[in-house]
Length: 71
Image (cartoon, rainbow, N blue to C red):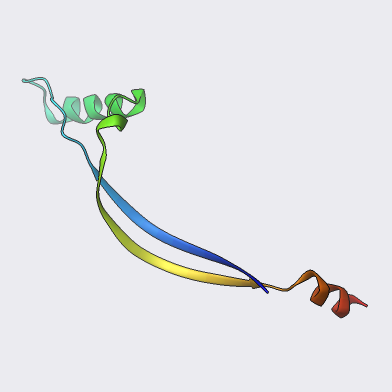
């Protein structure tokens, strides 16, 4: 018997970055998005927390079981 197990987790990462002074809220958001999209912030991301969301299993019949059912 073969079983496929799926685990869903939510990973929270944390990065400490420097933001230029004098930016308003929308400019700060855009600056962070730009850093993330460019890949510059990825090297600074550290896993901070992992939350378990769900686990499920799907049982797959053996190939021999499938052949005997269809025969």
